[in-house]
Amino acid sequence: MAKIMSEQLKYELAKELGVYNTVMNEGWGSVPSRECGNLVKMAIMKAEQTMENQANRY
Image (spheres, rainbow, N blue to C red):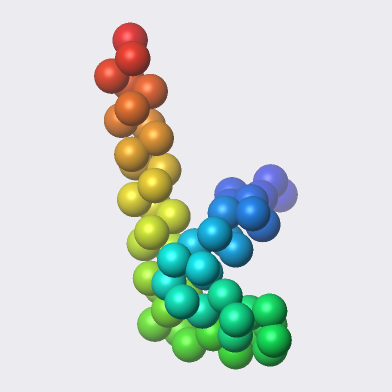
């Protein structure tokens, strides 16, 4: 199965959400589910923006 989200993107989003230190010190399992949901929402928004920008190029 292919990865949908790169490790780099996950860490970038964790920094934006303010949970990066938790991830680094305790692992992803220590991140509250609400924050994980927010991480997914941010990833979807970034993907939509990328798709929109690519569509506007053509």
